[in-house]
Image 1: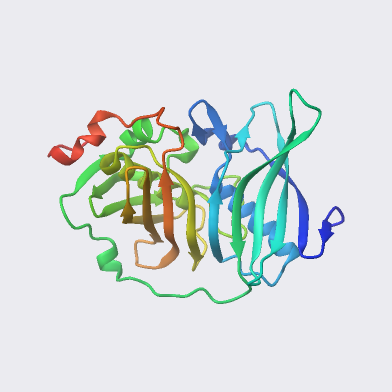
Image 2 (image 1 turned 90 degrees about the vertical axis):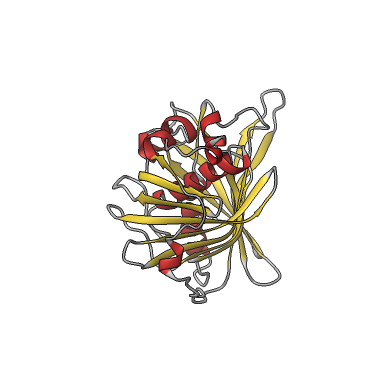
Length: 294
């Protein structure tokens, strides 16, 4: 904390982010990009050291603004957690980096992820019926995890954490997901891999029913009831709430096979961030009219 910059309720914590090799498997187009789930982990841990009264099990108003591009020749990334107290008492936390302009001798600041943490309160526990959660109504299709990672979410093997077949219908997606044992930190939010895999499932739904490749760009509320643990398997369920040609808004649950609830995201937003450059393969956009499985 000796390097903390503080002016009133604005504080800036320097961050040195270790660039583990597995992160290079998290990709967008030709670049490796730092996962939003990892950014939330880092922001929560560093914000808690400065404002110990916050509740990191409840994350509000997340905004995934700009990709943080990873370079293979770097071992660490230097950045900041910019913290400020809002009028309602919540703490806004932003992951920012600075780089020198190639043409001008000035530093440019990029904001990558922004979240808010409320003061310490117990997360609301209004759980749906587990039996209903794992049941998909309507015509259901099966997509193998091999097809997901070969053609729909072309990440490297460290992020192949949908296991078996993904089940999809117009009413949502259900997938078995895993939390692999790795170098990733699990403090304070749990393993980052199950939530990332749940995002992959939501991306598949976007491709099938909205015909765009959706990336998570933010959410209204994330509630962590229990931390996901490396080495364990979970179930992800995504339920569409509102759709448009440009965006999916959905709710997301992560539970274990015995019916224990671990996480919920309300108001997850998925959009095409490629400006239309990337398109889903025809077989997934045509799946609604087919009886076959992929």
